[in-house]
Amino acid sequence: MSSTDLPECLGVIPARYASTRFPGKPLAEILGKPMFWHVYTRAIQCPELGRVVIATDDNRIADAAGALDVPVTMTGKDHQSGTDRVQEAAALLNAGPQEVIVNIQGDEPLLNPAMLSLLIRPFKNPEIEVTTLAHKMDTRFAENPDRVKVAFAPNGRALYFSRAPIPYPQNAKDAGFFCHIGLYGFRRTALDRFVSLAPGRLEQIEKLEQLRLIENGIPIHVQVTESRSISVDRPEDIEKVIRQMNASKAAL
Image (cartoon, rainbow, N blue to C red; front, side):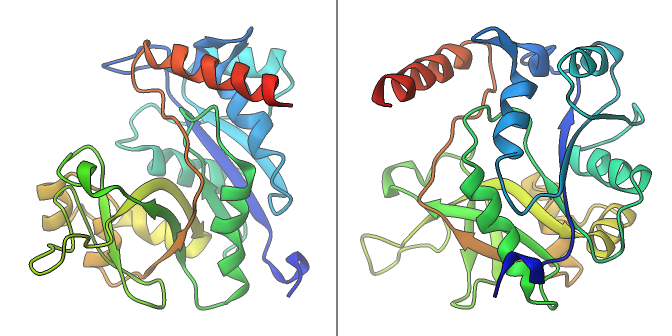
């Protein structure tokens, strides 16, 4: 099937100024441009995305986006998560009920556009409501609670997400751990339903909002990728990103 069989697709990059570990993170300079610009320029290389916007509640970010000709949508300041901000942006932009809304993390300036294509293509199937990505994880890192694990069925349907090692390898050295990548695609109807639901018990225990979908019977389809990226969580992560960008240029 060709990409013309897909619904329209909107990419939203949530960008908030406030951050406990890294205030002003979207504006952090990387090789002369703010971080959100790097994410945006990579996202627009995804052929399935018809449009990509920054969603922010901060005038400093909005002004910087405008100066760089990056489309921006102003959203409210009281959102509990980036997903809530993405949903408001989709509503403000009049996304259709079957339009695919892609939540693109604003702190991954090394984003591979092919990951977005992989995330979007399952929506050719009208039964798919939500998609996300995962990659094979080295067993040595499975105990790290910051690396969220996902278990899924052979057809790709997510069974559970956890900070604990799942599945537990009782009789095997390699359980085949998969690390969750925090990119999501939603049909607009599923996104609206998600933000209307109260946080669930499992979500509150694990502090993982995607469990709200599973707790409410909204299926999540997992696509496996070999791609990796670097999330910028702290100021010191910027140097890692710059080194990898410079290495990529040298390899060209």
